[in-house]
Length: 112
Image (tube, rainbow, N blue to C red; front, side, top):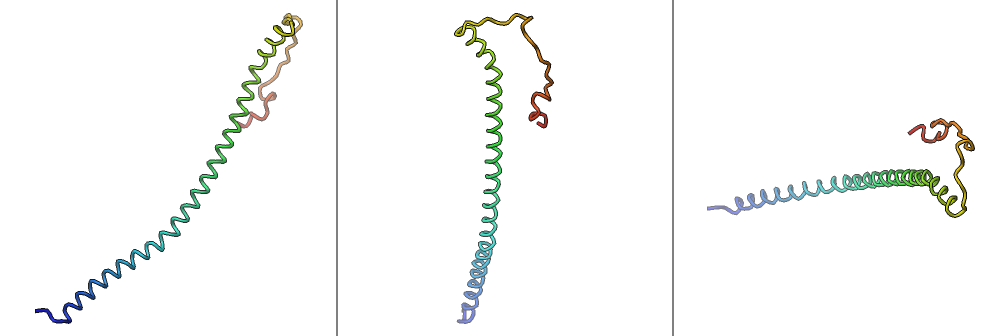
């Protein structure tokens, strides 16, 4: 037969474990909140870095497209000159070729 004190001790023992478990959960939440906040800030910085990288790549892509279109523009200019302006192509003796080195022609591309 249990006495009154034996049941109380068992109840107190269970209550201690419950309070310890609740306290441990509370402490874990206290440490988790700043860690999650720190992770969120770090992800924000990484997103900004990736956005800047994307803008740089997009800018380079636009510049390369303009360059590619300008290389094709010579043929288009010649086509307009012949068809609409009724001009003729120059004879080989009328042409002047200027030697150009690749590094001198495009010094901004040298470092890439």
